[in-house]
Amino acid sequence: MPQTIAARIEADIEAQILSGTWPPGSRLPYEHVMMEQYRCSRMTVSKVLTGMSARGLIVRRRRAGSFVAIPNADRAVLQIEDFAQQALHSGQSYRHAIHHRSLRALRRGELTALGLATSGQVLEVHCRHELDGIPVAWEERLILVDAVPAIIDEMFLSIPPGTWLLQHVPWNKAEHVISAVNASPQQARQLSIEEGAACLELHRRTWLLGSLVTDVSLTYPGSRYRFSGCFSPGGPA
Amino acid sequence: MPQTIAARIEADIEAQILSGTWPPGSRLPYEHVMMEQYRCSRMTVSKVLTGMSARGLIVRRRRAGSFVAIPNADRAVLQIEDFAQQALHSGQSYRHAIHHRSLRALRRGELTALGLATSGQVLEVHCRHELDGIPVAWEERLILVDAVPAIIDEMFLSIPPGTWLLQHVPWNKAEHVISAVNASPQQARQLSIEEGAACLELHRRTWLLGSLVTDVSLTYPGSRYRFSGCFSPGGPA
DNA sequence: TAGTGGTCTAGACCACCGC
DNA sequence: CGGTGGTCTAGACCACTAG
Image (tube, rainbow over all chains, first blue to last red; front, side, top):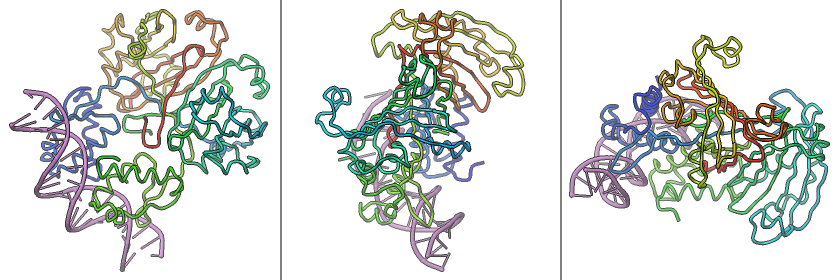
């Protein structure tokens, strides 16, 4: 039995939904009803319902009431852990190797591809990630120098670019695209796999206050890496 | 400028974090300070901070204060839309074809693979999904009959299994694994692609109140399908 | 237009934990 | 021990909308 009134209300509602007593689309008791039922103030009930609404479990409509949400899509929340952290957890040794690092101006084609209006300098970094000496990812990254001026002094000798950015730059928005590709000859060489082997490709763009910070493409050998994650309606777990 | 006091407080805090004025690990003003600053009650401030804490943007500690969270992993939230819904949005035509449907007992190997203690009946369904007549996914699904008794009367003639389940069964927890594989001869045939072509494989298990409901494996041709999604620290967007 | 949720107030008491 | 966050109250007014 939960300790607080709010937690008890929430647990009760979730139990009703999960048991099927309140199927998707059905109306919950009105706030003032639950307020009497639990002998608490309306604020307490409201706080619980607002939270559940924010998590997508219920839908609230003025003058109509609160309703159990009808899901129309599955959401998958993936944890994409830093390699160094992952190595710590699993006891493996992590190592990264910078294969390329250059400061240059953005090309015209990249401007449109990245949805940028004005040009600027970028730092381009190619990097290989290894766990226990085995290549697990090939990274090609562009970092917008205007967004992260401090980057020009960083050589990424002890910290890989992604970790450096995580530690130095907060981010506002990220966009992910996950696809599957057959390894190109270059990728196959970098990852020590057969040409044509299936690879996961993660493309991510990260923004800070509406301006692009970095655009990265990570290629993982399908035989050595997978994304996994859990998702509960009650929030990631 | 946001309308409500709470929204203004939240926007201000996020701006401070994003601008780097309050880097990860730094302490936020105490509740009573913000209360005076915004000339509002403590409840209003507390509600905002509680919400940001629930979303992982800040960490709150008694006697110490509230702090900007230090992220250690990227989170990607993927929307995995129902094919029928996706077709509606894009104006494509959706069609599914059931290739196999059988009611049988669980095999011993499956029991351990699915982490089940007691045996039971399962409905096994194989199904192909097509958009504009082109195969976009091959589905192999097990449905635990004990968890969804109504399923035995469903032939999935007009509704594919995943959609039927979404409409009839609420779920508690889902686990996703995304990997890349080279198409097997059978998969290549079902999806009209070359053998060995890179495919995305999505494996999902869904639970209701701790008991497994369904275990599904979806194979998408890498050339025709990708997962994408946005994630903001302020919640999925 | 009546009743719902949305928001806010000005207090209160408690649990916890860093000093 | 003091001050923080955690929780709750008993009201209030407003905005929206279904009937």
